[in-house]
Image 1 (cartoon, rainbow, N blue to C red):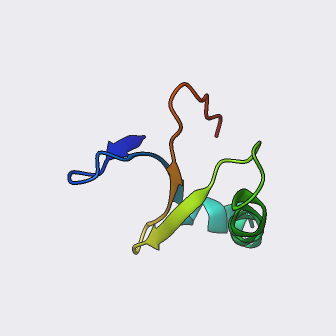
Image 2 (image 1 turned 90 degrees about the vertical axis):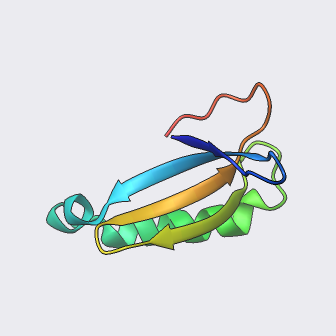
Image 3 (image 1 turned 180 degrees about the vertical axis):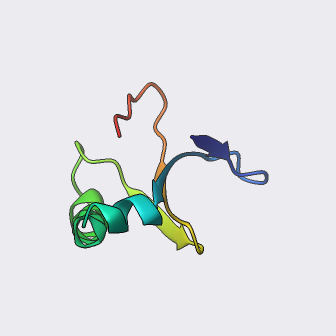
Length: 75
């Protein structure tokens, strides 16, 4: 998914993870490790997309990444 901020026009890539799927496949800890790794490495590494913020609701975990022009994002 992708989104554009209405005011700043900044583009974001959005990764949505299904909590039920993660729980059924014992992947909740893996998702947390991935998020923590992106927070630590994404801030200063040119080859890792920067995680801007995360959000969760009852069913999903969402991760918002800064989208760079021309960059290919594989999730």
